[in-house]
Image (cartoon, rainbow, N blue to C red; front, side, top):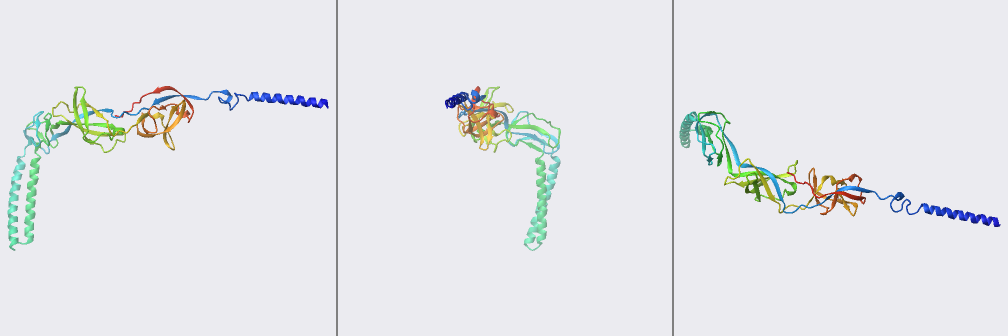
Length: 364
């Protein structure tokens, strides 16, 4: 009996020792304990960040534009013939309707006299037929035939007068002539250039506004233009806006009219256009395009908060190859993660190795 009790005590001690060993194996560094499997530290990803910053209201937008005459036309001969008179002078200022060149019209004027004579005879025949018809001395058919002959004669006169008008080159508007390209006695054919006429007391310039500023200007708004090479400035006004945006550049064309009564600006020169954006520009933040990802809820970015990656779904505006305009869902000052997106998940630990503070966002 004593021997059996002794063996039970030994077995109890042995079992107690086995439990102690198991406890030691499953201590603080065991799987599922703090620090991950085997006591290894949690994974941390090194990434680049961009500090989100809103556009400033009332900023000045600048673009380059070419100054052009408000109106410009190549004056050409509308018919063939010999140039008999030339009144145009190189660089002369002319008024609307001024006769600048005259092609020989002697043959046409002879034809006009004949046509006018025929018209006069046709008029007499019509008057006679009408009088007889009213007295039952002629039929209605006789009067209608006389009327048709009269109208034909009148048309012939008008046609020849139109042909004579084509022998004259006149200024369609007031402006300044360029160099005269012909001389008296030259044989001109239809389309021969006589000179160029330009209206330079008023100029126009076109430039492109990015999409985010597309509604910031309206007709009549003031615009500043400057020829920086000659240090000459002038004020212009928005004359017209393109109805829509260009699909390729997402910009809107703006036409500006410039008063150049003093002649300080030269047509054909470059000018810098400065536009102060004060109203109609929605607050937005440009963010590098590589920071964006899409899911079923739309576009989102990762931001670094307290050493962790956090997803923020955002509303977007203008897109360019460089950046995307964020109009909602992002706070100014957020650190947007721009690299390592393929490895990022919500809540994963991140370390910012480099910070970017700006982005080139302008679309010219």
